[in-house]
Image (cartoon, rainbow over all chains, first blue to last red; front, side, top):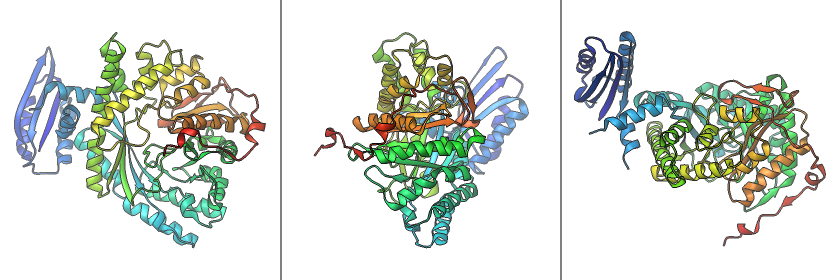
Length: 89
Length: 452
């Protein structure tokens, strides 16, 4: 079971490090990352395995979102099924 | 591996283009609540609804969070109350309405539909009694919605019922006159009403459905609008393809949510209604889709053709995306709930006559249209008779939800707030159909209903 974490906002030091640390703390294994920085704007999409998550998925979603608010970023965590269902016949 | 472009597209649809699940509606049969004792009947109804749907809101909220898709409304639809009312007195029916209201408030949903009757061929005593108290029931409750099916392609049109509908609408408008006649916003008259429509105010749990069912209404006019804008000046086949593909994606989200909600609530999955349902929010307008297709203003000549293309493409795309499509499934044109429609009425480009023509090719009917408060009962019944005839003759669902706003006239604007939006009063042809409506009886079913 996988989830997609998207992070967008102003580029600052340690964005990837912070998000990865939370994933590690809560037992989400990072499968793939794609990120880009355009001028001062940062955008990242992270695919994580949530099979071994140490807490309910909704709590993980809240935690990521709260971290984002703290750092002035928008962090969305969504179950992969929503993408799979929309873009595959 | 998930495609970055797909992910960004989904997120953009949700956050910039107003893609959402408009409603998750649990249909609940009340047939096993029937009791000749009024208090027992009300208790049975209250207990069944508050038991079956107790986790509806909570489940909706979890799914919202996990999939990142807003689920705007959580609702319940019940068996048309006339079928469970038996020998109830008028006050008895009002008490049932109040019971539905209490149950709805207890579980935290925002509307409960089904305080209605199916009278397409004739009326029972229970139907008659329920009809007589609809205005009061709507005035005295907050969350209860009512609908009456007055015709079907197979049965014809019950014109006695149609005559009564005009009276019901006027009285409901009067009783809720201090609130913009909002009672009328909770009442729908149908032809060929579907048993499984998850949208209010016409949702009810049809006879022939099982004990309980979970259905979902998707929405996404903004998504379709944006897709059309990106397409630029393409030809009609390309336009139809784009709308179809977009409708596919939108419906897939509905299917996903419906299956999840059904699993978690332990209630069988019913249908996905893939209707494009607008809201007054910016970028969430069906009228703007039509204008994006190349019309200067919604209501201009060409509007009906544009809507026909849109409605058809939505259905074609949606049907592939879901195992079970039902409800109304098409494009909605509720005036007060669509900023583009509101503007088109205000500038004079959209008239009620054009709206009536549009209903021949789209999925709902004359919806959330505010008419002058002094419109007579007979004219309202005439408006209903016209719309119902379109449905009966074309073997489709049509409906009427008009609001004769007490004390208002053309030039005024009524504001209901929230999803019900606001609307300018629209001009109506006031020549009288009174003698026509007064004939009574039934307009026979059309010849093409004999399909055997």
